Amino acid sequence: MNAYNPAYLHLRNACYFFNKISSQTKIGEDYDLEYEFIHIDFTYNMKDSKNVVEKYTISNEDGSKNYLDNIEIWEFNMDIANSFWYNKDEKNINKYKHLIMFDLDKDDLKTLSNGDDFVAKYTDELTKLNDSDAFQSWMTYEEDQQMILNTEKKMSYNEGQNDSKLEIAKKMLNDNIPVDKIMSFTDLSKDEILNLK
Picture 1: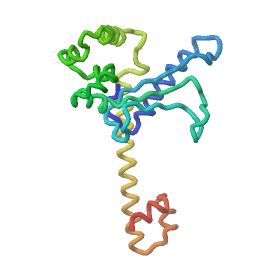
Picture 2 (picture 1 turned 180 degrees about the vertical axis):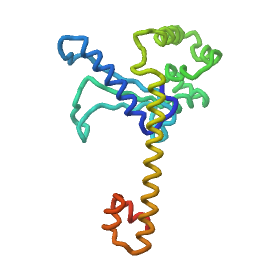
Picture 3 (picture 1 turned 60 degrees about the horizontal axis):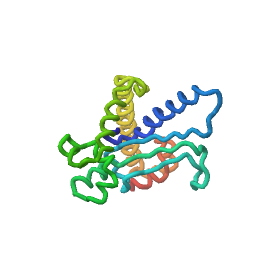
Picture 4 (picture 1 turned 60 degrees about the vertical axis):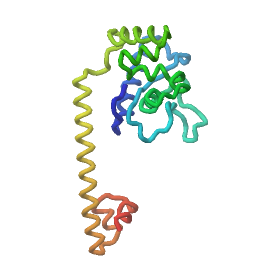
């Protein structure tokens, strides 16, 4: 469950996912090509997605051939799924009720289940799963928080560095310094510099 969608989210989730695949692979005596790995993300603030679910594979550039056939990543856009509940979109509520249930309070969950034993059982199983030692985090909460903090600091620093380079490039352009020299001094691309005009 991803409460927000920072730039490093997919890398962070992929590290967790591939760590689990690696752990599973070490259990066997050979590389099990029949075993399927599906990583599921429940993500909020997916502003660049208009779909309830985005499915990813590791494939070649045109998507015609998978590098690994037994790996998929499914990312559910929780904001869209939850909008069905609040907009009372009955068709999509029935279709996505197992996503919608994650964000409901007890009263709304009771309304959603409306005698649906599967939803009630699913809720109980999810509670047991969250308490299970078998699904302990691949890193401690503190380690994850420190990595998030370090990444956000680095992103802010890099953004600040880039802003400074853009300011310098703009001044150089105003002084009629050739673009190739500006590129050399600032490490900015030609397009980045020309966009400053």
